[in-house]
Image (cartoon, rainbow, N blue to C red; front, side, top):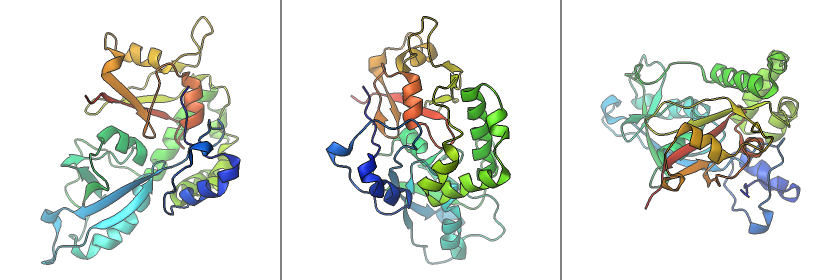
Length: 288
């Protein structure tokens, strides 16, 4: 059985503290419980240190790096304004969409922070990123608006889990704005207030994406149960995507947790899907 790091009701105050972006708090072993399928997963923090690309600096003095922690369930776009404000005095004028790289490799801004971290596997903390104000890599990354991207992903996942577009179409513009604002401000109660009526307890199809570094994202419809009525497991999904590959040769990870392959996929989705209702599983070669 996979155990997920989500707070029990008695520790709700710590969960809210983490959602509010304050200092991370270690969880006592006795507070590790199976998540409520209708509750958001505990958003652990990813510590970052961001520097400006030295080729883009227009000042003689090197700008100071920017240290911060970003919740796993959030996006780099949530802190872009702060980074722009910090580096603007040293950055070139007339810039467009800012972007980031990790070790020279452009970082996909469309991925939640926790997914990016699990995919890139930084070897040291804080995770070192470089921010760019010029030369957006249009052949590698798409330009776009983060809020619209989030809502587009949510509509896709709602269609899969409910089997129709009715739930997504019923979201008001005010609710759409409130969801994004709550995610940006890390307000779990406000997010859950709207999200609780959106999320299915028994998804018709599990919204799932499997990521392998350097490869296109796999996004196949995943039935919650097999033809014989038995629950579809994570192992059976990955076996279908990677036929002939020894399961012992790779790890499947989400929210930094190494997953057991016999976990029912619907239970996994219900417990640890991201705020856009997608279950992101990063598959990487097992380190020996």
